[in-house]
Image (tube, rainbow, N blue to C red; front, side, top):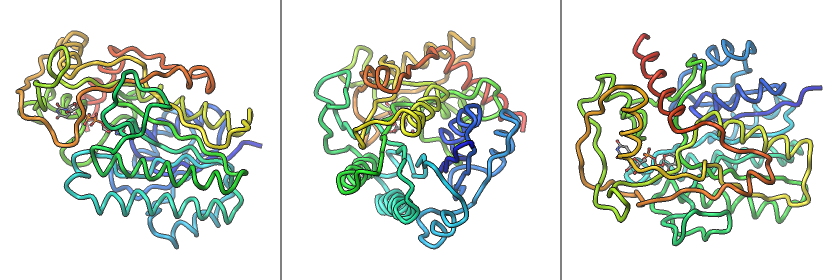
Length: 340
Ligand code: WQD
C-alpha cells in the first residue's frame, strides 16, 4: 500500500518539485497550501510531469480549524512541512507577519500529528540558522547563532520546537533539512520558481532582468570580505533539493533510526559569488546581464557554504546537478513564463 505524504506549501517552488519527486517514487501526495506565494495551476503542471494529479487542499495552516479538518479528512503517514514565508529582507520589515505565519502553522501541524499519532515530519529549515559562520564550510554542529533576520529566527525557533517535542515524545521522528540556495527549474520546464510580485531572490530577479521585465539587476554590495567583494552562497538545483526530501522520507519510513531528531545540510558544498553567478549565467546562455552595484542589503551575510558529508553518508544523498545546469534551467523557465 503506497504511503501518503502531506506536503504543506506543496504548490510553492521547492514544494512542487518535491511533490514530483515523491510521486515518481510511488508516494501518494496531498498538498495543503494557502496560495500566498503560488498559484493553484501548479498542480496541473505537476500532473503533466508525473501523470498523477496530487490531492489539493487550499487551506491556511495557521488556521487551527482548517488544519484540524485537513488531518481528519486524510490518513497521513508522514508530513513534509514547507509552508512558510521565506524572504530575508521582507521579514526584516514585517517580523510579526513572519513569526505568526511560520510558527503558528508549524504548531498547528504538530498538534494535529500528535492527535492522529502521525510520527514523521521532514522540516524545511535553512542555512540562515548559522547566522554569520565563524568557519567555513558549515557543518551540522556549527554553532547556531543569532540570526540576521526574523525569517532566519523563525527557522531557529521552529527547530527548537521540533527538538523539544522529540525529547518529550520518543515516537516522534523529525528530520530538519537546512537548505542553502535553491535555484533552477524541473528539466521538463513545466514547473519552476514563480514568486508573486517583485522577486526577492537573486536568480528570478536576474532572469527577469535578462528577459526585459526589470531594467537592471542590483548587486547588493561589492565591498564584502570575499575575493570579488560580492556575497558567496551555496546554490543548489531545486531537483537535488527535492530528492533530498525523498531520501529523508525513505529514511524515516523504511530504514528507521534510533535518533529521533536529525539535522542535515542540503547544499552542494561549493560557494559562488554573485558576480560568478552573473558570469556563469552569461557564459551558459550567451545573454548579457545588465547589473549595477548598490549598497548592502540588510540581513545579508558575506559568505556561507555547506559541508554536506553527513547527508551524503546518512541520507545516501548527494547533489548531482552542476551550476551550469541550474542557471540554464532557470533561464529556460523564464523564457517559458514569458510565453504565458
Ligand atoms: C543571494 C545573494 C544577495 C537579490 C534566502 C534565504 C534562504 C533561501 C534563499 C528559501 C545575496 C544577492 C539578491 C538581488 C543581489 N530561502 N542579491 N541582488 O538571501 O542568500 O537566502 O533565500 O529557500 O533560506 O535565506 O538568497 O537569492 O535573496 O540572495 O545582489 O536582487 O544575492 O545580497 O548575497 P539569500 P537571495
